[in-house]
Length: 274
Ligand code: T3D
Image (cartoon, rainbow, N blue to C red; front, side, top):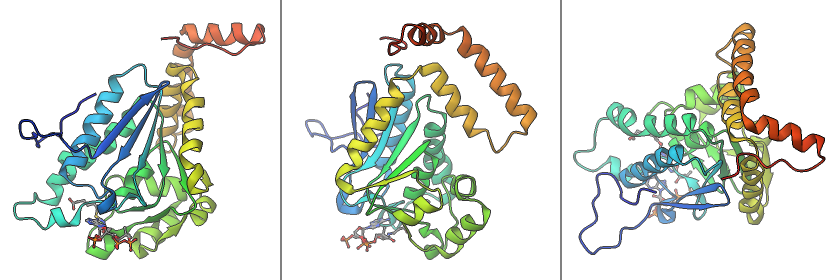
């Protein structure tokens, strides 16, 4: 894994502080935002490390599922507003193009399903990060805030695209325009997350979900992720064609033969052993 923060070379002999922690075990990568004192607000270092991490993981065929979470009482409070006020801060369109949008694409295009384990407040681009993940589970203390309007900005980092797809146009408009905090239980009701668990069970719940995904046939899993992403952009004919193409590829993969043999042998399949 990449260990340096793009744009921030540590002084010689200095131990770099990692704003993004990466733990890989049993084919699952756990990526943890680590600026708890600032509610994991996204500064240059954390954004650089997050992008580098997802680009590295995309090349790591041993990793079959990713969990994204945060240290402390926040998932992420979005853009670091203190950094934004520093002299020389880049224009917002540049910041989005060069940093945020690349992170969002890297998560979206990752071959592995990414599970957001939302451990606390997810605000602004922090909420957008959770929205772009393939699965979202939340602790009871989690909340989502489309905080952009409060500071005179528009929702970004994909939120205008992901949110209506997740909760529908009417709810998306209310969340984006009014910016009220959505509790974990309301997020569950509106389909923004698929599970809510007590805080102390969140990591285990995410790990179990990731382990189940990691045990699947990786090629079929990647194609399933990408087929679902295109669901709202395709008409039925295009979806049927895309499924047929993907199924052709899956059907030629040795993992399909293994799945069939395991079924006939009444045993668990061993997909793509390392
Ligand atoms: O580059 C660009 O700007 C373009 C991209 C924009 C994308 C965006 O994300 S724009 C939206 C940015 N985020 C926000 O506007 C959210 C700001 N934060 C909040 O609204 C609240 O902090 C929360 C709702 C997230 C949590 O509220 P609460 O009451 O639980 O905590 P708090 O007391 O407000 O914050 C605790 C500390 O975290 C505090 O620091 P202190 O006073 O203890 O030293 C606070 O300043 C700091 N903090 C929280 N959010 C941010 C932050 N520091 C920097 N940036 C933040 N976004």
